[in-house]
Amino acid sequence: MSRWQWMVVVAVLMAGCATTALTNSWLDPTYRGPAFKKILVVAWTDSPEVRQQFEDIFVEALKADGIAAVASYTVIPAMMSKETEAIAEAKKLSDVDGVIITRVVSVQQAPTPTPMQPYSTADMALYRDTAPTNPTPVTGRGVAKDYVLGTDVYQVATGKMVWWGQTTSFDSDSPNSISMGTTSRILGALRSAKLL
Image 1 (cartoon, rainbow, N blue to C red):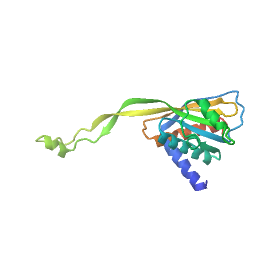
Image 2: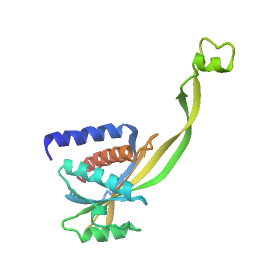
Image 3: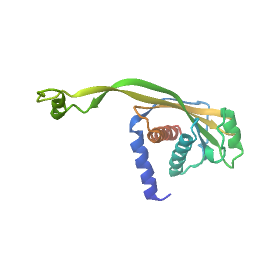
Image 4: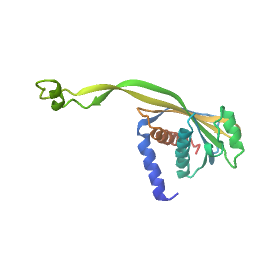
């Protein structure tokens, strides 16, 4: 990947991570390495489109970091039902030593104030003989959605989970934004844990 392409990937990830936070994580204290060199990326979802989009974003970010990665949809067409199936499939692939599995844990909804366009004096004049000179701004109620995603990292050779984390993407309905923000936060945490 050229330097320009790498800079674009970083810029996109930074833009996407503005509304995503790593809220919890755990690292197996007995894991002594090595860092993963080739990773199978799995997005656990019923939507083939979301799966492909998330996995592609994650794979491109790993490759930008110099780590080989494979999107699971390219080698495993049907979604698996257990983590052990993903690890078994990873063992069939050449040189894959790690598996990253991400899934939606919950979607939390909360009503939020939403600014709305106030009525203009011309609009008010349609319904009244006289319109107020300073119409009052109107506030509606919207629904904010916070997506909580869980990510597990497995070592292929042992089938053992070595890291897990939870991210929250705040007030977003965009799968692309959620994917980019989650990817950026997870990769940062895995680098800090020396797993990459």
